[in-house]
Image (tube, rainbow, N blue to C red; front, side):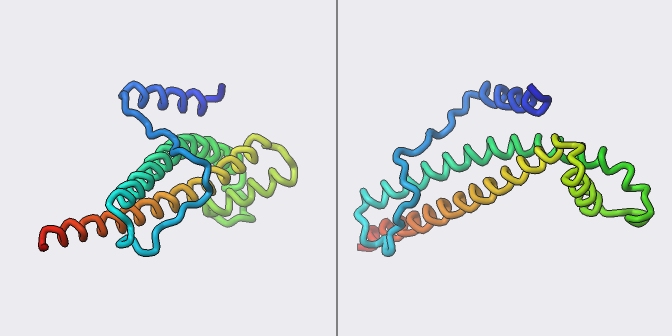
Length: 167
């Protein structure tokens, strides 16, 4: 086990000891769901069921995002350490100027490693980091979708409650 894996296991165990239940994966394997074009046409039961479904999707996506971010923090730390260690000799090099930016050092290190294959672990970390960042962007997008959908249905529910009191 690597140090990151040890830390991840420790963090997971620590949170698990708090006895906070995680949302289960919602039922079904559908890749898409249909959001109602006009929520006013839904019955109260349909409205409630759709809100619960969105809340379930939101909770599960938040669970996945939390686990992903926990791993990303560790991968990012190892990657930055590797880049900084490999880039030490570049920082004093006159070909990069007196104070090369972190991005310039990173680009030089990655390019050198791709050409020479000296630090394959660093390239593996870079690849894993990019994978995690791509999935993170998708999960954050889905969280926003579920949140906005839930909020829209909640407004419809509130509108109906106000309307029923007025009548």
